[in-house]
Length: 259
Image (cartoon, rainbow, N blue to C red; front, top):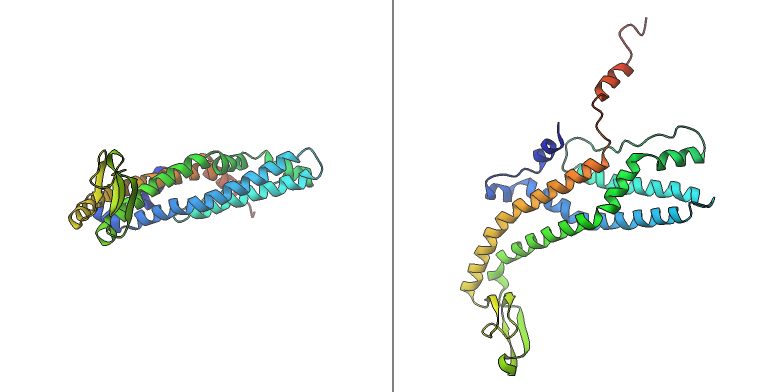
């Protein structure tokens, strides 16, 4: 089964925006993106600290155990991301790490840091973190802002905006309402652009517009979650071996092995 097919089986883009709003896919995708802002940041900090410390002391004998600990920290952080992927994919995501080929500290160290799997982990945990964090945060901010905009009629009159200088240098003032734009001199001052929500009809109109945009933003959120999950799965899972099934058959005992 291809990666795209498995991703679509969990994070489905339904044609009906109302069914999409009530589906598990939307909220699973939202939680996946939201939780990454915390788990991804923690994994980035731990991985960066471990790799930097291990690399700085790698030329000393004291640095050898530290490099092994750094590899363990990278595997642990990558394992956390694989565990988060389990909520989106039905098949387990495994790293496919190499086993040590010989006894001793040096053999273990060489196996760990010559393994392509750990470098794929580092590329995801460190290299792609700024891009994925920025993408997830931007999409979530837009999505949550539209969600809050739907509730404008319930709270639009509580915020209060204050400006110190009026038009043409006149006295400032204050007014209740929510700025959906730029109003440096209050809701009736010029220049200003956008919509200043200070009445119930304006709040209802703004909430209706936010509702329409929110239903469209749901597609953007799920598409972002699918993209993020596809990148994570591609880097954190072992490469697919097209001859893996044949090799497994050859490793099994044959019908005449007992004889």
